[in-house]
Image (cartoon, rainbow, N blue to C red):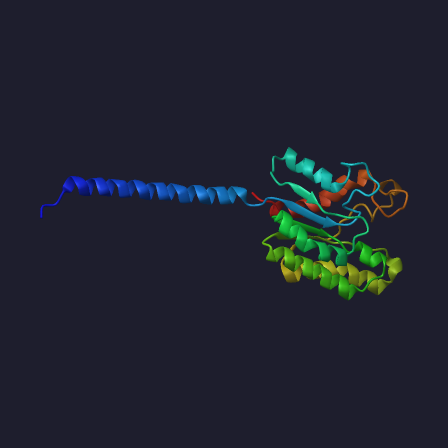
Length: 222
């Protein structure tokens, strides 16, 4: 039976066209998936991140959003901070937030209220560990914000509390801000704090952002 070379050529041409179309479709799908990947930064904190006692837009999280916009970095921020929040409250809320926002980065700024209430350091440590593990399981990068408390809570408690943050960051290979209130709490400048002498005033929040930014920037989606 004679071979129809014209027909064979047409079939080959059609197959090559289909293969090219399939390759382009796969490339488009990959590009769309990469583009649609979450770039959200989730901040899970307490009053220090919730703009307690400040006008809207004066807190470090709001200043961070403005900085990202100024540097043309696309990374929407979800500020899930609540005044008075403890590590147990944050741990209870985190999974729902992860499921809803699917963040690329999770900033954990909790622990100060645990210490102010004299709560168990063992519980605080475990809650922080659980939050870091949950965030990493959700494929998010983690930035742990370290905190310190005044020595009047007792030397041992004060030291052990401060040591929690670098310890957990090291064992989980997470980024760490050693002390959120560096150059604020360690300065004898009353104007840096609100009248309660606990919460930073608006002029202190750019300093707080400067403490956080160098550790946060490398984690942001490119």
